[in-house]
Image (cartoon, rainbow, N blue to C red; front, side, top):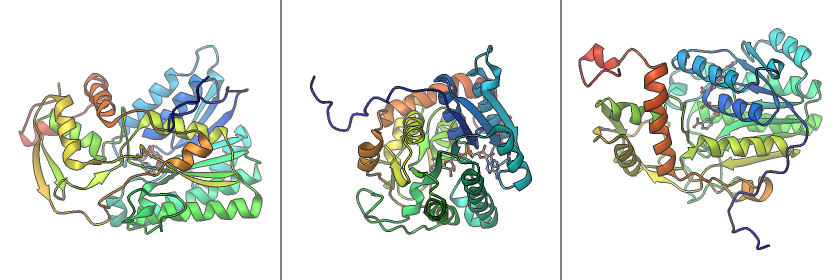
Length: 359
Ligand code: NAD
């Protein structure tokens, strides 16, 4: 037949056999989404998460409930959940001894750019020490493929139109970004020293159902829905490559299934949306006008991100499929149908007397 049009995601190769995958940060936004996908296709999943309170722990508990729901009742052994710190050497050693995972999908990290300026040490600890520790165990236990979350933030204030893995200079402008760059460097070292297969995935602003409440997509939907003021940093022209969670999960699973000795890939949508556009798309799907307070740009924030995804396309068959407007529509639907009804929340609205309570 005709060859597929350029930039369409290629079909995943048939899923042969079943994998046992350690998903770190499996109670978080991305980790829980990957865990659900792996369980749905028949893999075994071992989750480790410390359930820290960087954001509302009820969201993480709900994520874990959703993951458990994906595990077949007649095969409960396909999911094991550990609560613990990936930096705790004794605990992680006993986890590896008990579970002997052959694949590692390392999503645990302190995320968030601005808080990393306030408290850099916890970022260095969880992200750099935690990742090193996992790679140390992974090579000792003969892991076949180590896939980990890096970030578009490593590019910093790149002036390129499209950020490409092999052309752009990395200029991390926050401790968070620097911690992710350090993970990439250490990954190279583990590949070099021990032939550990490692793939780093630079996610570009991930959003979608169960998205992180500290990130703009969630915040804006939440504030607009409740009639509360939202803060816009800068004049609205700053632009982000927003990537829908299902596309990110697709890219992660492709990377798990396709080990490379050492690779770093962008996982983005490959196009940007300005902050102003973003706010008006939220207004459209929430059906309410935003009350916008304009504030100066924030230190550590970058004005622009846009992924060149051609390498992920060529080597993984990855291509994002969900347009921004559709992704926000689905996220608003999740916010209204699940978040407000099942997870939320002592409304801030009652404390400050503004807006309406989320009933
Ligand atoms: P998240 O905060 O929802 O998930 C991270 C999870 O890791 C949390 O549940 C947290 O409790 C856990 N964790 C943190 N430190 C830990 C430790 N020391 N031991 C055990 N568990 C620990 O964040 P997310 O948005 O799902 O991000 C997943 C990964 O993707 C992170 O590495 C993040 O840096 C990266 N990333 C995310 C985005 C995005 O837009 N969401 C963009 C770029 C990169």
